[in-house]
Image (tube, rainbow, N blue to C red; front, side, top):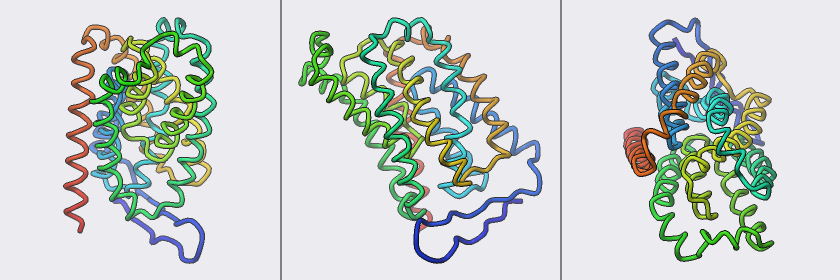
Length: 281
């Protein structure tokens, strides 16, 4: 049984409900593990896996903000597992690209702070639109890439490109720290707009930068006691297993199918969460 305690009174950031459970029974644990395994695999293939684990935790009874924080902490280890699966592609990345880890960390912590200050009602209303925006951006990435000619390798060696790339990654980190679900979709879109074309190299970098963003956000969520631990442990195991297996499957799927998976997940989850929000009104 899940019990919610009312939010605290007074000024300052909202205090989210503390969640308690008398025991984690097998059905709940099995569903949580399966959702995390699938999320880890999807993240390796295309990104957007948290769009599975996050709604599942809501279905299991957690408040939306607690579910978001718990999902972020639980799925984070899969980023490390998936990045190991793409280690060959990451090794071939130009060193300049690795500077993007700086805005990733800064954006991640600022986004986590914003989530802490956002009233749960507002967060519930924003969720479908955040996912939909990331999906639409991913759909038009090739058009944007051609328009701004960011695929030209010479541009990536300029100072202006580096400044623009770091600012863009700061926004991605802000989004990821605030709302972990769907960060993979936005990350792949950002990397494509920045000029990368190899989907497997993009997946490797997505896992690396996403691990930085979610890692610093997860530390803050833990420090702020926004995480429900019984689900974290079992979901972390599922996410690691799914992430490593999914990395190998991505090469067999092919880039076209990968992009279709991303778009399909994005639209499906945006619609489902929007309908869920309307039901509450």
